[in-house]
Length: 452
Image 1 (cartoon, rainbow, N blue to C red):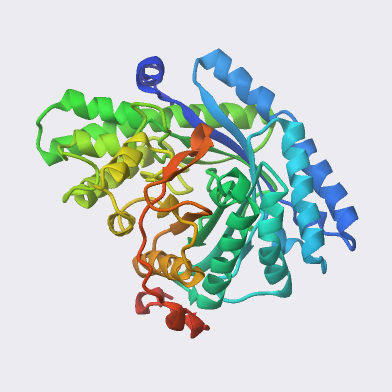
Image 2 (image 1 turned 180 degrees about the horizontal axis):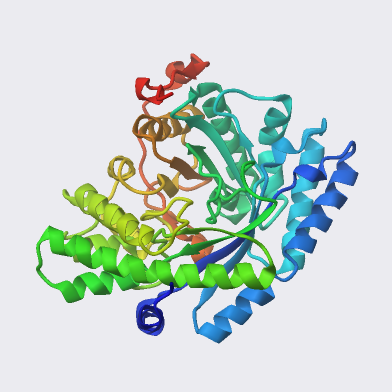
């Protein structure tokens, strides 16, 4: 049962502490949209998306108005497009991406995800053609997001896919260089990707999901930061309890919105993703939470320990509030989307190496990080391989969303606006892993993957 007192208390946090529902995302299966020709597939895809999600935005706005809960984003996630079947060329895949963009515009949503592939153990022809089409697809669309899963704990790391994604990221940056390489902000490389994640750019609708579902992503870094400030100089056990109780209330609000959206749209409720997702707004920062625990600045020694405590407490509080928790669920650390992270990078307190260490205990990975535009492709591949190996070895989701900023050097910045924010260009080692990447093949799965 939803406790009315908890909900009312949570709503009181909205105006003062930036509490919101970050996204209501409808997942839609496109498996029945396969067709012999790309044109026919595009027609089926457009009709299905606009038919299923036609009332998504207005329904979310009704809930927002009735309950006084801000719902920042309305989104759609789709079956990975490479699974549609058909022998579509790269150019035809781009046409499909443009169809997704048209559908997103018709619905009034801000992003549509699923333009991607699952290649943790190897490529099909469709996978390879779709991945090769990603740069042109993201350059010619505004709302399409792409994700590629290149590794899992069960399969190991497909280093051929890692090598290909280095090329794709560089090409995407080049084709969108007149917009600060924004195409790369809509492209993420995963290990152990969850199939019910409502957050972009990694959202897609997994093959084990129902025909159509509603997934909700909550937020609330400002609420957690305020709760920690009120708790004062308590010990770590009490601090964890404070965070757990706060996460419980935030997740209850997400559960309420998810149930209401599900009922009104006539679509099954999927999951609540209880991630703390920051924004560039003042007070809406995961970095500020860590500093509120006692760090001089995010990036100082102790940052990884503080983040580990935060992530664990958020999960423990959230799972008590909803029977169906999924997605990523924890704390996000996207540099460009977090005002505190941006400041820490600008002061030199936070480096890529420190961020990589932090990803061992947070929800995602190296997220929304801008690097110099002349960074060698092999270096990007090495960065992906390092981060992905953390996920594979630790049986968790990790990801890389990196932006080679053409014409920019360390110390410059790129600006995307909105939730994507502003990314300071970070220094990255230029030492080459090219011979390592060129070996190709798969890095075998770790021994603890053998659990059958």
